[in-house]
Length: 127
Image 1 (cartoon, helix red, strand yellow):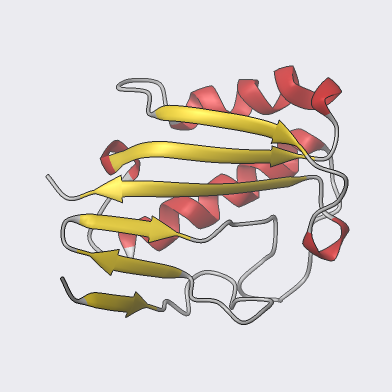
Image 2 (image 1 turned 90 degrees about the vertical axis):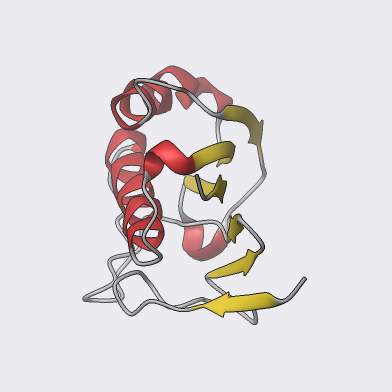
């Protein structure tokens, strides 16, 4: 199978040597999205809820740039710097994935790029 590198100027540019997403067959593997504003390049240093919203908005925009939506997501991976914010994150997350919830893992990490508290990556499949 051939892999296709995905790039969209509607989401933040990668902060390292990686692609925003890779399409292989019917699957789209998206790199983690952090609360980084694509227009300004600025990091949102707000609450976990605010960071979760911008991270998930970036995921949604990346998917839409390839003709997919959140309903195509089959797996999410969530990274939090503090597991005590799990409930706060889930409150926002449930607004984005209210029906047909994807499989998910969530782990606490020591730190994330640019000092943010939230990162979300997804795998989506074309219907």
